[in-house]
Image (cartoon, rainbow, N blue to C red; front, side, top):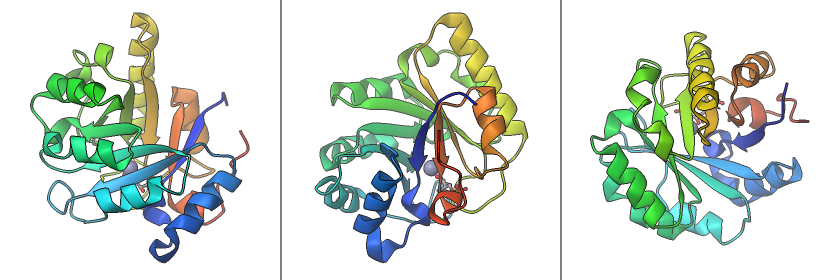
Amino acid sequence: MSKFILSPSILAADFTKLGESLRYIESKNASWVHIDVMDGSFVPNITFGQPVVAALRKISPLQFDVHLMIENPQLHIDSFAEAGADWITFHYEAAVHHHRIIQQIHALGKKAGISIVPSTPVSVLEDILPFVDLVLVMSVNPGFGGQTLIPRCVEKIAQLNELRMKNGYGFRLSVDGGINNKTIGMAVDAGADVIVSGSAFFSGTLDVDN
Ligand code: DX5
Ligand code: ZN
């Protein structure tokens, strides 16, 4: 396995102890934290918003990898940037003017990511790939932690990695959902270099030495 960035998802943390959870992440030598923002509309679950991001920003130097699973992401990007997000990833399926949103994120001095759910093919991203800093491949249907990785999604990572190499693109390739000791190898081998893990990381079962 080649080297990768681990981005633990606090969706699986104890919500009464988020500060301690960030310190736990730091103690495992991870430099990113994945923050899942859900709106109960794009996905069937609601998590947390800008006030929680802003509170955590005050106590942590981690890179905040904010995954917006929300409708109309363009309406909320400025406030997530202000709250302290470093990487802002929105869903292809939740927006129309993808290029404009990427420009909006860049104008705020932040890194821009785009994500696809398992039913969305890689081909729809081809025109936008030169402009993004990160592509997040959802390997479960978004909304909940603790689900099982859908193997077909690993093929999409390989497809994106091939496009990246062929065209010399600089985006990071992230995988999110169902990552554990059994699945991490195939994701990294396919080309993922940002590994999101919630339940396996916080249950202490993910081997994080990389
Ligand atoms: C799911 C979220 C994921 C989730 C991953 O909608 O986007 O980031 O926290 O959790 P695990 O690692 O438990 O599948
Ligand atoms: Zn996520």
